[in-house]
Length: 385
Image (cartoon, rainbow, N blue to C red):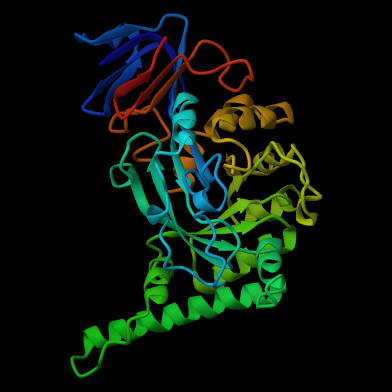
């Protein structure tokens, strides 16, 4: 399959004013200027249009809270235990949720989705494609991260039950307790491997799940809005040598230089929202621009269903309106989330060897007036004029 005579926003090696993308067996085989364009029996002339990588939402809850349903479709928070690291997003995602169709038609071809933020240790997040009918066939990496939560959400959830945690101190303590148990569990497993006379520890599925975080196999995604919660996440991550990604980071701009010095990875959003709780009181549209200016790599998310998934590019447009460079905003929903998630060898850019996920626009992809004319997912055309 060949797309030619198009502008190509590669998100990794600059902009090709008039070029082609050659696809075969679901992968990008070649991309370049028209002077090197090959021939193919299935070819599409995209004159006057621009091709972008498929958009990536690095933090949402797609398929976990289903549209139009109440408790029946709510599988996002197991708020019966403040520590649930053994929960797997794959066991809750419903790819039949109509929001998957809306995501794909808007050009959002990959997401990270999983549990909500009711629990200090919430469970395992999954990186998936938005196309397919069986979740097992849609996986990019699962688990890709463990979800942790700080701030008001755990406090509010358990205060109403008169259970711990009801303070930020207790929330952090529960996270540390679980990580410490996981460290001990890993040491005991290694001791049993090294010495045949040493028994393996009793099975602990929570510590097994957290072992992947402790060993650096998956990331630690910390829900944190307020500055003190952001730095608690950094503090805990340093204590346990975690691969930290800050989710939301609403007050990040207040300490932008510090976060840059910490080499923080930030997934920011939702941008289209109201200040519905105290920890959002300092929410500002300029957050992304100020963090980027300070040298922080920023991805933009919807936190679906907080903001409907199809408004991911519009969310990036809000960041541009508030001072972010336009191309940086496009990269904030393509190559930057791929890099932050450790998936930049598969998604986020138009480059040989990457998955053939493409979106094609006539106008500005971040405009409220624009939707993709073409969407290519896994090398298959799923939307065209």
